[in-house]
Image (cartoon, rainbow, N blue to C red; front, top):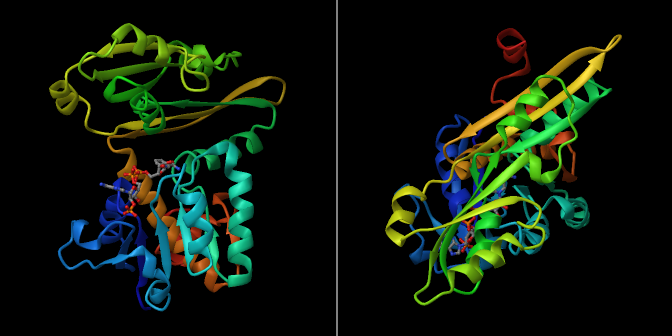
Length: 327
Ligand code: NDP
């Protein structure tokens, strides 16, 4: 069997993570990295890896089996997803939950006529958490599903704080409430408000002369991002930021609390504790690249999500080997 040739579109945190993840997969090789920046300014971790201009990507359709899209969900993927799905079988981690249906339609329109397969919103949330929400609500049909995030650095919320006038640098952590999780695990099925489930912690470096009180007020009252949460804001130095806040931890829990029979309590829980959110997300993307390749070869073209992927397709092992070892 020839190895699956993977292309990386966009070389940020996820791009780097995918480069590492490919080296851990026995049946994959890296065909190249594609970037919008000057290729000479992008330095892959591996020394024999080629970097090409994304603008010339259509010249590489014969060299790449699956393109893993590592661009940002807000501005990159809505444009790059459909454009690249016309040329390649793709996998991406699009995570703007509210816009997934619209993004799915755009990919379906691009991939279907091209005969490619576009696997979207793969990662952990959306992604592995989505699968666990599905298992939970299907198996425990009478019940409630809870998703808790953290403790984790939230990129979107950190960016929102960084865009505030007077802010030089900032990070935001989302922290699940211990009290809320205990109630859920005990099968109490509490009704939890947004405010009761998580708290948000911001660490902010101010620009010289910036008004701390004004910045704090802008943060805690920001609609959609902070207004519905208990948020704490701490002002720190750039040195402290570099020393204590440069890793990207994340994780969380999907818990389904349900009842079977005559009111018997059943609780299903799936949890992730991640020291690096992007490295983990990249590993999920890479495993799903194998599935995307197999779906495409079996004639399943168009937009697909994790719900459309039979789990065995993720594994490099044969179905017989999986039955023997993991069933
Ligand atoms: P980054 O900001 O690190 O990278 C995004 C893009 O920025 C890159 O593809 C790169 O494209 C470009 N870029 C421009 N300048 C630079 C530079 N100097 N250094 C690095 N990259 C640069 O984002 P992440 O990789 O951390 O995350 C990508 C997306 O993944 C996020 O938007 C998030 O929504 C999503 N995500 C999804 C998860 C899930 O569970 N589904 C979990 C985690 C993240 P180019 O090379 O073309 O310039």
